[in-house]
Amino acid sequence: MSAPEPMSREEVEARLKRAGLSLSKAQIDELHSVSGYARALAETVAMRLPREAEPAVTFTRGPK
Image: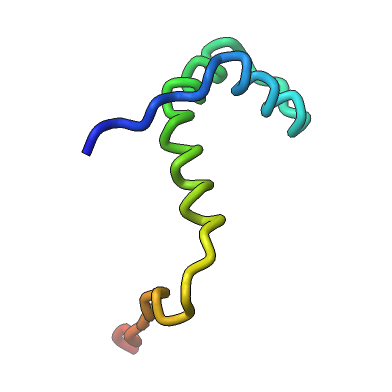
């Protein structure tokens, strides 16, 4: 699987501004480098999936 294409630097900065976040240049650089993955995750979360597509989560009780 290839890495998703990152957003443009301008788009990352615009989204941060819209969210009201004031970050350092180093933090913006880091977010820009992973922005393609963030966009892919957001698109996946926004998809309408049937109820049965959600995996069940089970918890086991630990020792007393």
